[in-house]
Length: 85
Image (cartoon, rainbow, N blue to C red; front, side):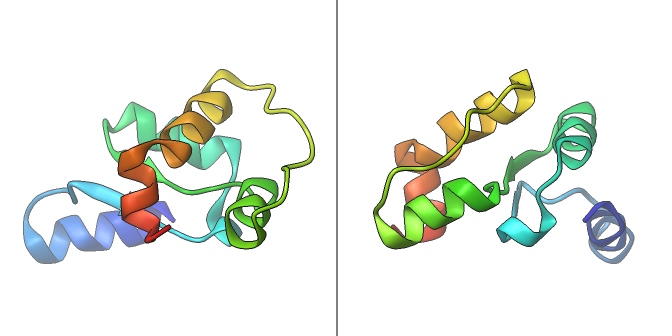
């Protein structure tokens, strides 16, 4: 995911305001790198994506602080608007 962000910076001259990606791009490492670059990332983990798509309870707990923060952000009003849910 970071190579795509780098390419955006190279082409546009500035970083994107938000990074919105599907659950296939989710990893704790990606979240940490996005936070380190002060990027507003919305990348749900597979369990949260399933919950958002099917309206069922998600399985599993988020252990990493970055992961818990991302789940809160994706479930927020801004996150629902970003994902069209």
